[in-house]
Length: 164
Image 1 (cartoon, rainbow, N blue to C red):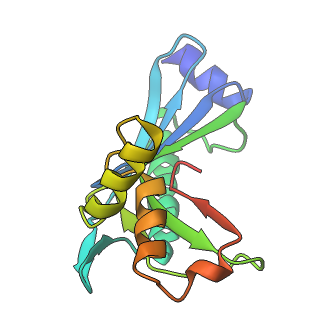
Image 2: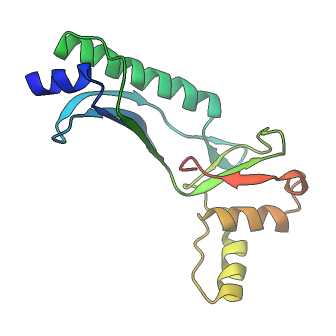
């Protein structure tokens, strides 16, 4: 572990964060791909008003919680304080629906990959593109919102997922 400790002290460790479906994870990796420390935060999507969703405030609490646990793990296992990393990589769920207006305000609850409410849109898009568009994809969620005449659609300036 001496090489891991040195990598942390020299700011050469890499921080990876994953926003998974049931857990947010943070892992600190050394130059030799050795796991030096980790932290986690359990979370679960909720079924509200007919959709599976996460509160974006919970994302921030989860990121803070898993990072806090990772920093404590570094202190406990290496006896040093984490002050600097070489780089940070973040990944998250690649399917879902997060719609924002020009000012960055969230327009509708986050629709996760678990939602199966865009079947009509997926079928229509598959026919239009001659390519399979699963109903869990963001484009299917967006088109279903258009078909449903959801009030927020006309104000969408950007659409993304947790993966960005």
